[in-house]
Amino acid sequence: MDLKDLRVNGRRLRESLEEMARIGGTPGGGVQRLTLSDEDRRARDLFVAWLREMDLEITIDQMGNIFGRRPGLNNDLAPVMSGSHIDSQPKGGRFDGILGVMGALEVMRTLHENRVQTERPFVIVDWTNEEGSRFAPAMVGSGVWAGALDLDWVYARTDVRGSKLGQELERIGYKGQVPARKRPVQAYYEYHIEQGPILEREGRTIGAPKGILCLHWYDIFVEGTANQVGPTPMEGRNDALCAAAEMILAVNRLPARMGGNLVATVGEIHNFPNSRNIIPDKVHFTVDIRSWDDDLALRAWEEVEKEFQGLAAARGCPLRAEVTWRVEHSPFDERLVERVLRQAERLGYSSRRMVSGAGHDASYMNQVCPTAMIFVPSIGGRSHVEVERTTWEDCEAGANVLLHCLLESLQEK
Ligand SMILES: [Zn+2]
View 1 (cartoon, rainbow, N blue to C red):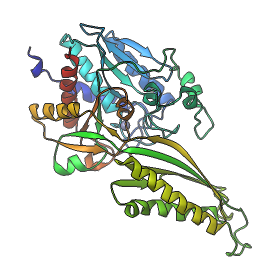
View 2: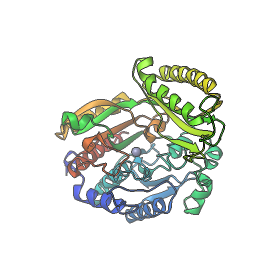
View 3: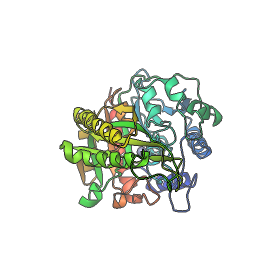
């Protein structure tokens, strides 16, 4: 059989995705598989069982990243890698992350059942805590592996209940012994849903992002004075929630003010004591700033932080701002991006270049080796919600593009 005619099994890919969607499945048709939860553990166990069926060499590192390695003809050559993440957002969708893991698994199965021998070893990976919604920041599994984040700092991250990431990793049985440390990789491909509206709007099947925007996360703590809401006159109040409200709108105005390609969002807020008859004395909220232009994003933060200080002073509510996480914008390997577009065309799928506004493990992998991503349409452009959907046909199409991009890299001598 000519390898060019090889195709994945779309039905088997669908069945794998459906079986995974039952783990942490929500009544609204999504999944809730928070990182290092019992649901995450069950999905990992299933994934590992599937890797075992193909006699892959399975490794679990100190970060709980799971690797499955299929040998090549020349195992001295650096492997080719592909994967994504099994964890989800709270009330998240059934395609985000898992499509990239199940897609790579389907490629592995296709190579296995057709006894395809490749020059290089092929490694499939599930990265720990890509989402960052239970433990901030995001993408820590790949971040530690790439050498961008410190292992002990990541272990010490806590969730809202005070549990530490390192302890939870141990609790679910996925704290491995192997150092979470980068090794030479020939190429990394990550297959993912677009999570935006562009491909669907243009009726195209495959997106080839030129890279990922920079991602800057901040945590803001505003301090006021609590008091009974009835007897306390309006003048002289130090209402932390009102101060935060003004700051949140300042964040929303920031992109228009800065010009250029920039988005800025406040997505999380905690108000204390959160009682209808007490003036709020503590507010914690998050700021997320993204752009292709790292300097613009940094200048935007400087601007808005200055504005925060003015608003805080006017309300008599001092604030503390923490830089939680910064990842530089990540331009992908042009040769691999071209390859994605070329394979899409050869397979008869329409495609386009784009950028990724969402962060992905591919951002850190791009610091280690040549990297590219393959996007497929999100119905209605919706993601991180229970109604997140991609057609089975598109899932299969993306997996075929992944298969042939991987094959090209796997045969490189
Ligand atoms: Zn994802």
